[in-house]
Amino acid sequence: MNKRLIFVGKLFSVVLLILVLFSYAMFQGGFTSWFLFFGFLPIFLYHLGLLLYPIHKWQVTRHFSRNVIRTGDHVDVTVKVKRTMPYPLYFCICEEIFPDTLQRTKGSYESYRYLNEPDRMQVNRSIKKIVFPGFHREINFPYVLQQVPRGEHQLQYIRIRVGDVFGFVKKEHTFQVKDQVVAFPDNRNVHMNDTFSSFEQGSISSHALNLNNTNIVSGVREYEPGDKFSWIDWKQTAKKNNVITKEFEQEKSTNTLVVLDACDYQGINRLAFEASIELTVSLLEYVRRQASQVSFLSVGGKTVFFPMHHDPIKSDSIRKHLTRIQPAGPQPFSKKMQEELPKVPKGSNMIMVTNHFDDGFMEMIQKARQQAKQLVVLFIQGSALISDRENQIIQQLRLTGIVINVLTEKQLIHNATEVSVS
Image (cartoon, rainbow, N blue to C red; front, side, top):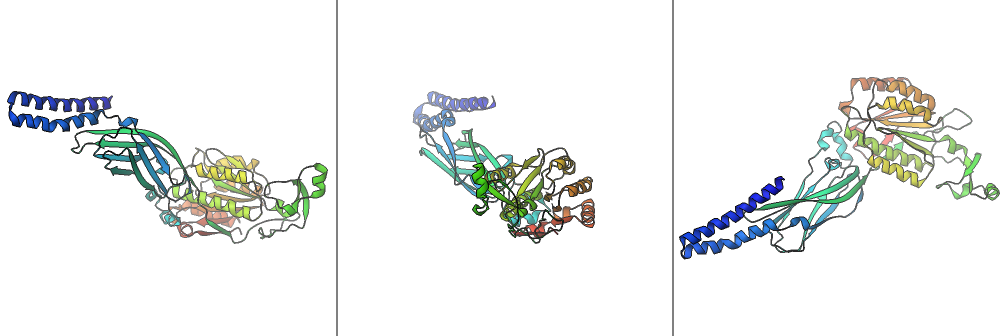
């Protein structure tokens, strides 16, 4: 309604000016008055035509140099405008309307130096480009979308403004142009200084996860993607008319469960949460490369469990989940994790990634310790944001024999991250 009133007001103003000048020429008469009327008539007609020019019928498209990137990368974007009627335009302004998911940045590992000041990663991202199209039927607006944060970003709207040389008539229209940019979590170079495993017959831990002990056959199972050709049991395959592989003792003994705390809490450090995502992705990849079976549990607004046995399809599902996930849920992580512990496979090595401790964390850890062969906690937070209560919990965990790695900005600004499991 307001747009219509503005249009009617501008139209009335232009027509009124034409009538006033025409009346002046009629009553005044003479060469000068008619010269002024006919001299300004083309300008008034141009303004009238610009008011009636249907810019909403333009065809607006958006083109990306690539739609799938890693966190922190850039994308070259070109907005193309095609119009059928080449009406002369003095200027044209194109404005990209960004969603809330793009109102923050995420650069390289150096950005973690702001782990104590996560609000510095929030930005008011704005892109406006101006061109002088004249009679051109096709108009291009190139720009670069830099430091794209993790997530699936839906770009939906483009606002275009046009006007005359005097700025008397201005028109704008918002076009709905739906496109998507996906920024997968970045990988970090993770190294475990003492990788863990424990054989079935004894309780002695062996820090040799990357040592392929395939001499002791403990059973057989159906073939799964990722199994080696040499593991196939040809006798059982012939009997069952299905591909059967040998199951070795180390396969059972090196099951690892990675748990991510994706619960929301008051004053959450979003940059620390992004570091948790990066480290989770890297840990899953590291353990998988060690020829070990790894599963993943995401505890947040919804609890999602991914059992994984060298399956590339499930690995891709985990990556998509970690791309979309955001902190959510009214319940604290310690409470939700206690509810999930009975469902967790017993006897696995457990790596827990979190960036917040509450009063119920110690109780949950003690119960989790009974479920797991070995438990490792990765706590990610800015050094200046670790509270006194969290420092107390860290000390208590170490006194009870829980392995805890505290990762702050000092460790995260480097690509290589060392994780201790003993």
